[in-house]
Image (cartoon, rainbow, N blue to C red; front, side, top):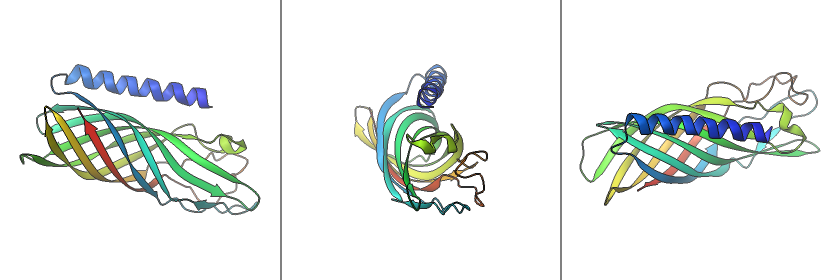
Length: 200
């Protein structure tokens, strides 16, 4: 599962970066991103025992490619995210994931500090290393919305603090999985994140 996930992530990122570089090469910037995420995943109730979501505060970090065309900008990226864990009566499983977001940013014409609105799709690749891995989908999808501001540091470098909200489009557990096959819930990735981008 891990090798397949890695191939999908890298292929998706490469395609997104290629699209951005071909479409808008003049003002493109690479950058890094990091922040805190506050998950709101629900507990999962099954006949074999309740799975309680713990450690709702995690972190994420990765790389981005920021391309621009007037007030509309596109920013694909690849991020690693520490999500949290489900605790069962006799066991627990930790959830990590890779993310491939494609943010569309609409900037407002303000000098020095440039506010913007953002939104876009994101592919999510959960990574669970223990026996519970087969109960999670290889990929799920989310939508991101948020607000941010680009602070110019000169020579083309910027800092971009953001407040983001993620909403899962589909659930991230397998219906035919052994662990969650009789679950009443359809858990989705969702929550608030604080993120800082640095582009150069």
